[in-house]
Image (cartoon, rainbow, N blue to C red; front, side, top):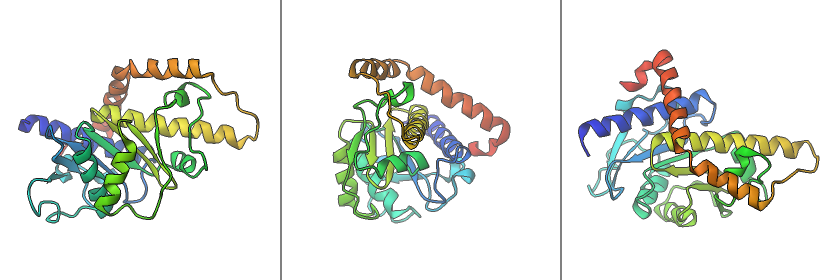
Length: 243
């Protein structure tokens, strides 16, 4: 990977933290994003421990090298971030970018006995049969064993509903991961709001839901454009994210 490519990854990842803060998707100084910069996932960028998302700059991101003994311990990295992302990039090197958050509505859905997001409109249908579900919350995910277990539960899916905990998404690029996290939270907001009315839901047929989900998968350029438009807003209002 060239130095220019790494810098672009740093800028994009820093932008995603700022966007998450602007949208209220973050939780205090917890949660974490990472982006692999080596083909095997052994080298990746991650946010420093307990730094508010709204202050993160490209230069703040920590480069972790799993092949360098002591590399991780030499940095101030949250133990849960290390456990989850270190194992995820090791077990699934195709997960180039990983975002873990506790957004209000998605986390609410994670507390349901059945946290399946029902396809009741276009956003929720994006996730029809496309979210892995973990129901084995056992406290803070701060061990390598727990990180590896979560990676296995996620399998080849790109989203994981972490029961009684939050959500995680993975994607080939920062822009695709950000848009997916944004839409996942929006879908959960619509789903929770509809459930809260107490009225019977009009659930889409399996055929329509599947077609809609496949249509979403054809427009990754939409996701990337959404991210680039958000970066333009940051360039105007918070250009220091690039520093």
